[in-house]
Image (cartoon, rainbow, N blue to C red; front, side, top):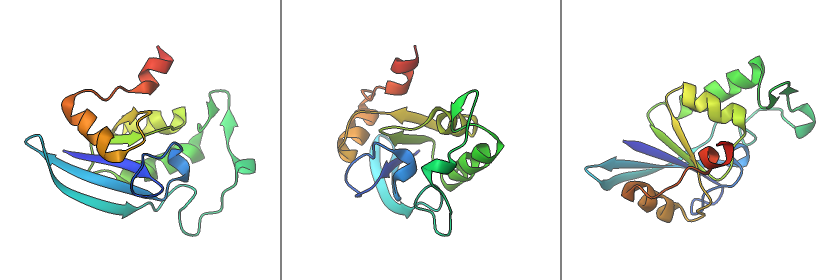
Amino acid sequence: MKIAVVTVDKKTVSQHFGRSPFYVIYTIEDGKITDTELRDRRTGHFAQNQQHSHDEEHVNEKGHGFGKEQDNKHDEMATELSDCQILIAGGMGRGAYERFFSNGINVIMTDKTDIEEAIEAYMKGDLKNLYIERTH
């Protein structure tokens, strides 16, 4: 299993998914970390050659992050992580969250800031998904 954690500094879980330039990818086998990898994000605010500002954000009747253009961007983000089953982030818009889920990636939103603590909590089954708690 592979778990991606979105980060700005390679040590902490980013609180804003779209503004994070990196993923730290953990490979877990038989309950142990067997590999880690740092990936540059190619999508989102830090993507090379991407024009974007909050003035251009697309908001429709469902809220921020929905619509055909946003769905396409979110699908591109999910493609970057197509080998991962889990994505851990501190915060993420509903549109991105739903598109990752529809692409087979389970998103866990957490208030843990230390990446290693979040991974250990996940491996122990103790990492709560705050997105689910907030919406139910």
